[in-house]
Length: 110
Length: 115
Image 1 (cartoon, each protein chain N blue to C red):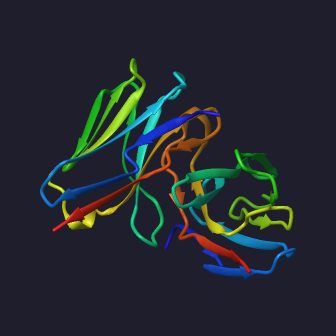
Image 2: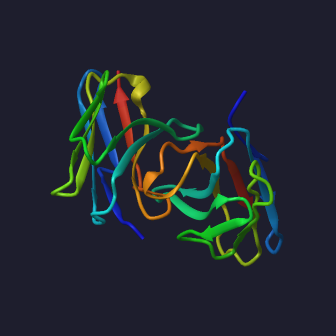
């Protein structure tokens, strides 16, 4: 199946700093790239997604960039807040369903 | 209130026993999925179903079985053949699968512990 590498596995930042999480993939056919946030003890929820015909998408403090040539996409969170602390998963579409990265634990310290 | 309901939330099992995890959705979605979540391993696909009476194996199907007799329901059975069943299990649904897959909606999860 499709393979996606996610880095870093953990990320600690101070409140107000920016955070960037990157995912690389190998399957050129993938055309849908969502990001999910999972707070402790909660279900994963979609926070932003991008399709292959777009290079960047923003939603308030969150943005996703996609480089199809280099086969990587990144999540950018600006002005981080303690409530951003969670595990973030990237994913990409495949033949049948989504393949998820292993996740990044983001800790935002006040 | 629309969504996905998983039960039970916590389940304990003795070695050698089969257990069934329930997943029900009222979103009228065609596609349903079962993922397993282990620390540091992300979400790994066990089984998925694109339509009633049809399902396919995911990446880690060994030791698991499913059925899809109704659109709303996609139960997962963890059999005694699963060597390491202790994990957090997530059910999800989406309008469609494949290259046009959109948002996955997840249940609250079921935590299975083998004693």
